[in-house]
Image (cartoon, rainbow, N blue to C red; front, side):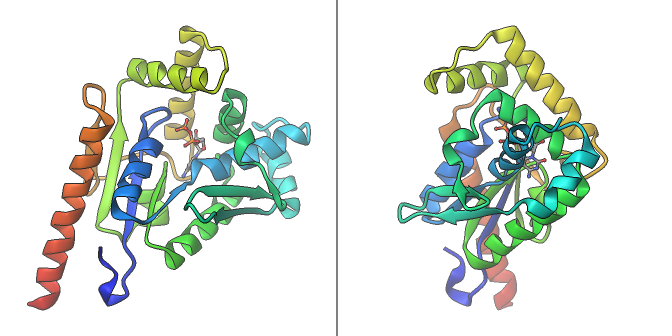
Length: 237
Ligand code: CDP
């Protein structure tokens, strides 16, 4: 779409746990024919590693002490699917449990980890046209892109979606327990000192509580097209 002039197209999507932002981001990327990076998977890889090492993920000093031994990399396969390599081991299929999600939210509070992953994410953005989703993409990772979106939904709707996702993965889930997890994660993600989840005024709000994923994707695609067009007009004048 926008790379005739060698400028990369970078689209930033943030939002709380279970809002459907990764699904929306994947469709937006598919539609534009570009890559999608789910940055949460990188934090999940660190959450997995801390758990495997028998470390309490809430213990910031212990997490920090692990960092010199950790290498988290992203690769895209021929079909464009993202793979997360944790010390050269492909852990992509081990990341989607609630336990790993909760550990991810805990280790994500450590600024040194955030700095490492943010650098890796920016490097991916230098290399590819990309849609990135996470918690701090609009505010920290890609603050210069004009394409910023905040995808959210009510906590109960997010719980229902998370339950369906877990059930599809063959995991059993209890509504109240998943809701409690979502609320705890919201609190932890928005109150932490390091790059908390927040929406700035330049970021377009997409509330999917009563809207389908398809509608969210359409709104995002038309906002991108509009801004690309007005950017071109400004450059020409
Ligand atoms: O899928 P879900 O939205 O529940 O979580 P995720 O996107 O896989 O991210 C897992 C955790 O990583 C989140 O709860 C955040 O605490 C953290 N995270 C972050 O701090 N910054 C990002 N850019 C992405 C994820």
